Length: 216
Image (cartoon, rainbow, N blue to C red):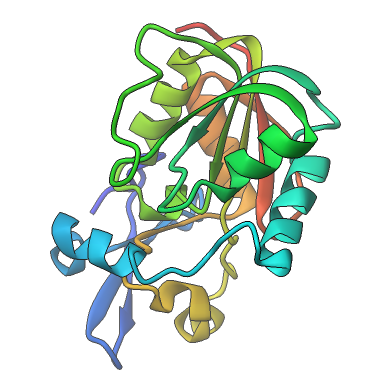
């Protein structure tokens, strides 16, 4: 199987416990789960419905505050913002509307399905705990670029994988059966280069920020 990002050859990492194959690209470090094991769309929503996250959860809110204060505010402080993949309760948008100076829209494939981004470009797009669910990261980043203004900012949150097979197979993050795509900062740099972005910040853990540098 060819890598979905850099199109180089991949190799298989096999999980014997759950009998799942993952395709690892040693060139860009992207890992994708076997499509045959993907959770169907309707079942995926049922799993998301079990999440219990709200603005009353102080730890959850503080995680978003850290994301905003380290991955967004150093690069942009005002403007129009799209939260792409806002989830069953759009806590991030609630925090931004309460504590920061952005004009916001939000969209989610399951919970906020009105395509509010249509015919719009934003100063910033945020996408937290979303790209690990995406089949085609190249297509997603092209979409992000198309809906950002010149020099617009994209800020994402996803847990970066250990670039080592044994550690990956022990990693709790991949146990979520809706997580199908896994990245390192190196993966994200390659992805940025291919889709018209510059990776301008990452914390080497779970936050990355990009600037749109190319229109097409």
